[in-house]
Length: 408
Image 1 (cartoon, rainbow, N blue to C red):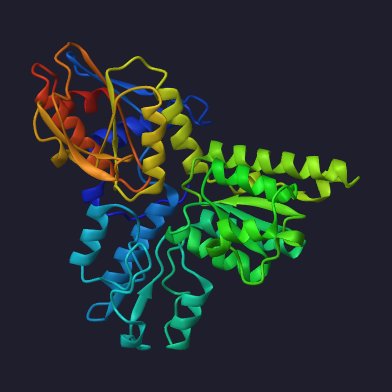
Image 2: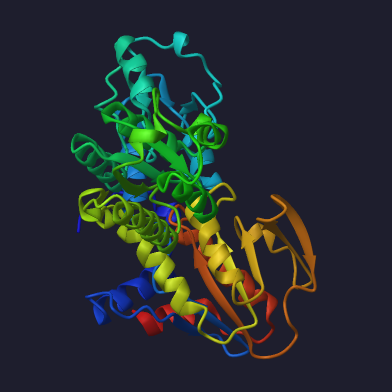
């Protein structure tokens, strides 16, 4: 596999040793069980797969190389490179300026740009409209493009099924940069719409089976459909693709549900269902699948609590939190700084959409057993810092450097 020149500040000697050992022992990636880090009174069960994925490492490598190779030039990012606060702060400190926030709000007008400026497309990609606008100003977006190859794979597959007269249904968060980009690419090829979750898929299935009217359709989906969308004909043949950071299991469940709806309608109309539903399972991101499968295996381990590390606006990280919450108490933190002491911790509550303080969060029982993972945009160095701090909190724990020797 291709290797990337990622700044050493994001690497971790401990995590690298653990990952290298697991890769050597499980080359086919069939073992999703967590790695036990036994510090004595503290036992940490580390997910089999976590941290930087291929697309993230590729984007970071390109971005920092662009800065190094273009001293004195104005360098901009369309929006956050990835959803990790430390990485984005480091990029800003290197001189890169952001043109938009994650919601698409303009921070620096495009009119301020000229052909001598460099604009980097983030890992999420961008819409065709923004790409065309930048090119009209003489900016060579193709040279400084860090779009994840797996996101581009979804775009390509969307175009392929659209050419065969299928409507593209995108499972994603409507405001997310990647979903906006995927929608733009899909809508350029044919009819497209975005659904957020299984509840919206159930609603869409009623329109597919013509159990609800077109008027009701526009009421629910008017802001998430391509121009000229006609539910009467554009829901006849569909294919489902996803925002790559969504729960892969949910995307598959949504696809299965909508396929069943197509089959039910086809049976009534004496149609061939297989001709009206496109198989798009090959668009699911391997890294998202691996990280989610690793968490599913990890939470089968008896433990006192789980910690998930990553940016609060990171979609893939939030889904890891959701998986852990199904089984046990889970804390979602950006970094080890949020672990203030053995008594208090700042964590992000997904349900309240705010950071809250949790008191007496660390059990007094020994050994205390903790499940640990991180999102695809979280540096290993941050995970290592969490481990070191946990060892400091739990008196009598072995020093992490002892484990480095064991795994090397």
